[in-house]
Image (cartoon, rainbow, N blue to C red; front, side):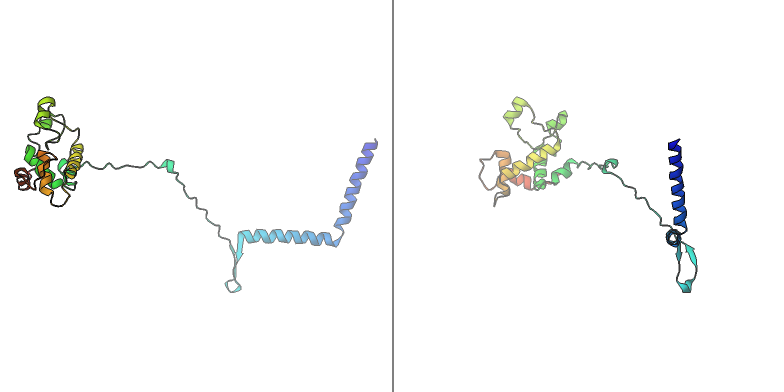
Length: 200
């Protein structure tokens, strides 16, 4: 019973305090100020007031949100365009000494027509690379798996034989046929190669 009386007395105290507070002017002034702030904030967020000479109250234009699509690197699969393979002639001419090598190719095998590697379908040569008479007699033709490998080796060999050195152009061609020990400035073979027109 005492608890109930205590509860009602506490409730009465709260009601009386609220009533006294509401009778005071500062309460209503504060309440009016808070309400006006809320109204101004709401009005400002939804409308905009034009200048007096453009009198009117207009709905505030809403900002348009644009969503930017982001694409991660994992979503993009690179498309690789394969580089077309050069023909054998194009590949040979891509070498610094390609024109000379093609003349040797014509001299050695009629531009591959007499190349045993090609005839047998087991690879590429036709430049006489590593094909001394003794080698062919014992092992058969010396064949490269691809014509790229053939012309890469040919370019390296002609440089190693000294074709880029002063006054060594014909000597290097002679060495192609006779070996690296050849030291004369020219030979019949070099004369024949220089005057050949490649038919490849």
